[in-house]
Length: 133
Image (cartoon, rainbow, N blue to C red; front, side):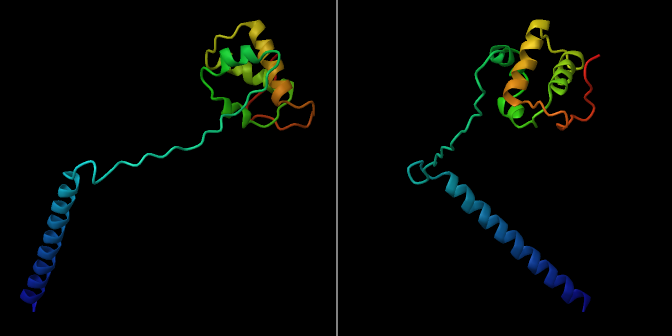
């Protein structure tokens, strides 16, 4: 009984190895085919770049923020109050070493508030962000 089980297992294993070898050989013959018989298909996907609103401070924003962030990242943020945007820009300077001049900092904050901000005091707050002191 044990010998019969061993023979069945060997037969199944041998059939499996033979099948794998045959498939591998067929796969190799397909890669040897001429390019005309196996053309590479090319697809083109549409791109929808986010549009940044023009306005005062947009140049400072582009020059300082888009070095590290994609434009889409910024446009996907919730609409924040000026205090939150100030805290976020300050965090980029203090915690991450962004070399933003004080003039550019003010221009960036004003741009973010005008293009993606809110005047509502009940606006969502970024976790861990505090207004500058």
